[in-house]
Image (cartoon, rainbow, N blue to C red; front, side):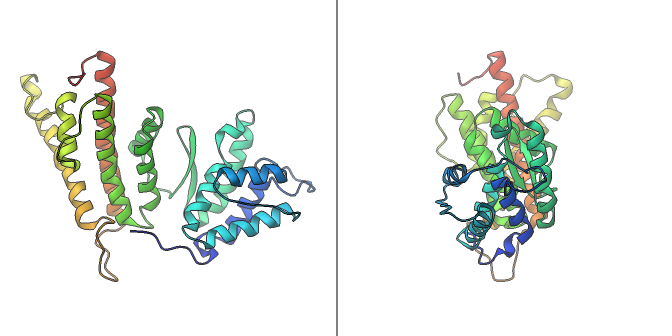
Length: 300
């Protein structure tokens, strides 16, 4: 389900756009207060926007007003809110502040003062900065997001970001992304093990395909008698929860339209699905890592 384009700048506050213009440009260059962000000349401004996929041309205009006007144009266009949020992430790219870590922190703090009123926050996730809604994430989700960056599971990380960004704005999209998180992790692990994907490629089929090589099958018989029943119950629950997330995607995800005014799932349920999927996915990835270190992978 495509999101409707923003038609006005109300999708983000005018003050947030003002702040973003200040950070992107680094200010007018003639003021007495220190610049926020990095000062960018005409060439650097055009290069910044070009790298983000925008054809900005200054054409002799004043830098700050021109950038502010261009941001408003982006926001009012198709998928404008998402595009502006990506610019916020880009302007706080830690790689641009390697020699100025204090400047990065000042930039993030400044932007967050305004984003707070849009119910958003700019936070560090691994090596990148992400805009998300406060309270959507948690220790498990954050740990899993950083793990996907460290392991170069780019497709998985993209789904985590999509789920977090959509939890309140579009819960069905977030639920769909939560299910895809589990599926993507399973496919990534199968690829690492050089194993083919199963014929049944839904979340249940993919999870079952990785359980055996990872030693996570509830039917395993090599457990100590004292804990065997408990471990099998937990492993069975792993499948049950994953199937539940898959069923929620089927009945309430973004692929299924709902009646006008009817919302079968809300942000609370979407966050629950994200946390559940991230817990399962993190457990699978950590199990794969552990067995890889020990050379105990059955698919290798």
